[in-house]
Length: 113
Length: 116
Image (cartoon, rainbow over all chains, first blue to last red; front, side, top):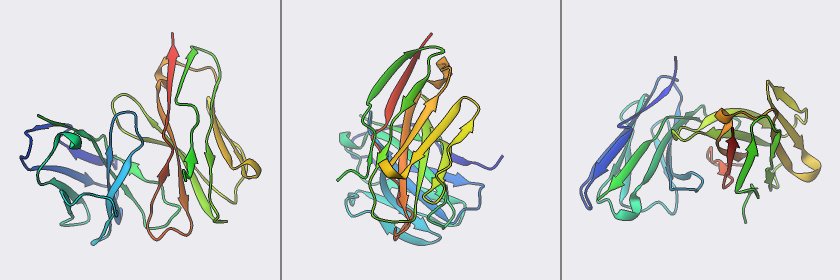
């Protein structure tokens, strides 16, 4: 089945220790997104890629970076995680039209010690 | 201003009861798209339905139905004969035709608990 895969499902890191979350998709979608979701809140868009074009949300901290080496893969790098970065990180993909549905992966739950 | 409002933060119902989740949106665009997602405790956002602004027909899918009313800017979701497996957080989302990107505006979600 075509899908969005995220690894790992759970990630524990230490305060200030860089961490990378990964996302892959078999849907062949051009657009990929990273969201941060904290408890009892809606997902918050961090950035998205139109193919290789990177689009950063204005309020996304510099501590968050992303890479998309090819159509299928996208990475979220947190350079120096703080306690406030503990959250669920959701990857999503869609086609390029504004009517397109976004399909989400299962998420990576990040814990910062 | 909040573009998507889900006024109900938490709802509890007894199994087999019907329940309606409210969604009110705000946009100046004439072309827009509305979505509902389900987020069970496992965390994955599961797509339920998409509606475009030109299609006001209500839709039924099994025990799920959606009532789209442009006159009141609402896109409400009803679960008939609720089951324990329906317990989840439900998000309503809006995508505007004027978006420069594929940005979704999510509501704050409604947490539904179905009590056996």
